[in-house]
Amino acid sequence: MTALTLEPLSLALAELVCEWACASGELSPWTPPPTSDDFQTALADSSIRPYVARADGQAVAFGELWTEPDGIELARIIVDPALRRRGIGTRLVLLLLEEAARMAAKQAWVRVVPQNTGALACYTKVGFAYVSAADENRFNEGQQRVYRWLRYDLAPQGKQPRSGPDSFDRFDENEQ
Ligand SMILES: CC(C)(COP(=O)(O)OP(=O)(O)OC[C@H]1O[C@@H](n2cnc3c(N)ncnc32)[C@H](O)[C@@H]1OP(=O)(O)O)[C@@H](O)C(=O)NCCC(=O)NCCS
Image 1 (cartoon, rainbow, N blue to C red):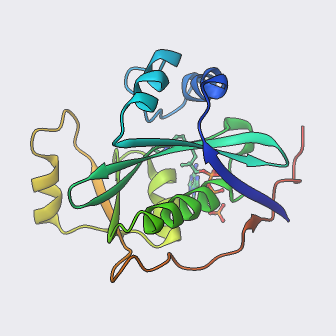
Image 2 (image 1 turned 90 degrees about the vertical axis):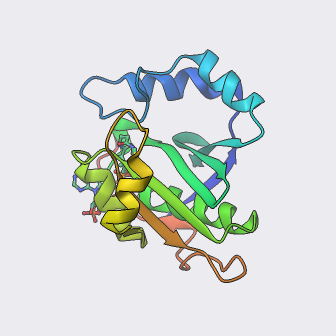
């Protein structure tokens, strides 16, 4: 079992996250692909909290928390392309939900392009639920793309997300 820990992004890791996002064939959470300047901008914005997750000291994943009027959006979730399907994405999302609960958010959101079936499966596995069609239409108004929107209930009173292990169990598989 390998523990996953979350820490605020430092700019020194921005290039690495850019590499993950620009890897060929990726369904990148960034359109267009990010540059290090984008992370500098995110770090300067008080409504955005960018995090890196580490396993055994190695940076393996990235995600942001965006403070919105009605909750917190988990955004730009990405796992090192070489380390997918080992439980890191699931664990990262749970850690971000714990952070959102600590920020006293009552609900968390994610938006996903419909063709990103892997991400949708990952979020529903964690416990996110699709919003109603009416809410989805409302949320998509004014967006440049049409998204599927999912919600995770942290209420009442900043309830902690569904408890899970601090670790994931498949980091050692298929080591390169
Ligand atoms: C989506 C993403 C974060 C998932 O990370 P991950 O570490 O591979 O996820 P996990 O190993 O925890 O997978 C959890 C579950 O999600 C589902 N899943 C994840 N990737 C999948 C894929 N490519 N195809 C189908 N199901 C997938 C599976 O149900 C999986 O459980 P299983 O492995 O027991 O079958 C990762 O694929 C990624 O970084 N994608 C590119 C960026 C991106 O799309 N981000 C989301 C933007 S909204």
